[in-house]
Length: 135
Image 1: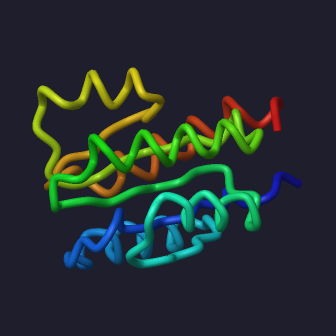
Image 2: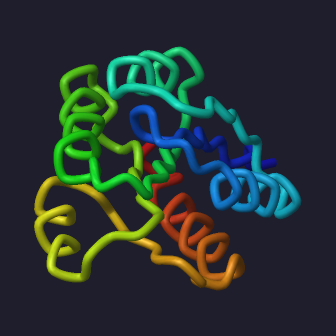
Image 3: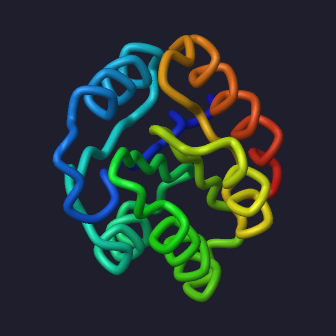
């Protein structure tokens, strides 16, 4: 029996939005994943929680424009802590010109406003299944 996919969802920095991250967290939970929801956090707290919870995926959410500074810090911190196979995804209002730079920084995928929840669930499931033999 395969273990449940474990995903941590956090809002980057002091971002005041909440609706999108809650909706995604509930959809992932309803799809059978174990979800750890942190709310607003800085990169250091996200990294610490991901390490403590031994998550497969870190889902970050932002609307405040801090994604180019804070999201790469999360990836870098996870890698420094030995979490090489932890998938990091990002959702929110991300300018299309920032997406290639974020992917270069280690963000696996970026989901913009209006992305169907099924697309997010399918992406996480497929990534985790392909990494299952590695973990």
